[in-house]
Length: 471
Image (tube, rainbow, N blue to C red; front, top):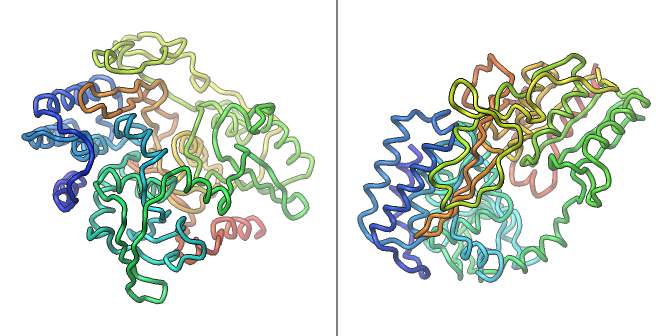
């Protein structure tokens, strides 16, 4: 379905004003290199999409290569094919030279958006302080329906399985909507049609801004915390709130406090204060290292446990490595009777031990479409062991694991499109989930309007505090 959407709406986009056309045979060569690399190296290529379905997606797209294309046009064709794998760690993107231009001098749409209920709203207008556009619903840009734009983006971005929240979150954060517009040929100046907060249709013409200028505005309007993890107490210590923004080795920007050291200190403080409720906030946490998720869970479970059941690599070397940047393989991988390699020295492999002081109180987990990768591994463990109440949105990562870890970055030789391929397929030590192609579902779903977002209403936290304070 997603592939059909892209090929249907693709022709409505205007022709690109940049990029040289690449001969058909060279585009075909790139496509075959991409396909073979994914088929031989991606251990989860058929985890959510059958081989027959994946073969059809490859074949249909290949048949479209019957004329010369620019690199950006080839990206439009190949991105939905890669997305059809439904692996959030595997996505194809523009050539590195174009990426460098995007983050330096290409004028992009100066709007930050939020995607809510399959509609696109203006969250920030970098071009004007107090802009009347903020809060309005975008209807069209340069004559192209935003409905079509959003459908194409949704078909081209990746998240695990059939999770529903990750793609809208991804499109609406970190300036991706503006960069996707450029990749789709929507360039400055921008003629914007929108529906205002009062319901009236409005139009505006916006001149593009480069990323450095937009970052300067963002730093002033929406400064981001510089800590990866922090702890605070409410209600005289009865409630602890643990926020994890990234799963990194260090918890502080000075790189002096390890994540495990931070956890040990935090749980000791909870023990001293007699905290009976713990709110763990992993919203907007895209992931990071593997071990920190296991480390946090080890303070919440009082018996030995398994975290990862297996970590599988198809081979140590692949044909496409001649086109790729490949870091050294993980230490401790060994070939077993199935002919594949297993990462038996990974910190999350094998029987894990609980940490002390153990927290035995109630746990509330806040999550959304920005909770991905390591966040989802941690959430799956909490869910499988019935160790938390879940609040917010469905997490964006698959319940049973992902394909990531050791990553080879493939640069297609003719188009120069970049495709990172995770080579390690993770299988978590969980079972019995009734949504095998989805992420952890909330016990208490929470929906936001654009008014909530503009007002910074934290409905997830409000609900968690209400539940924590109840008997």
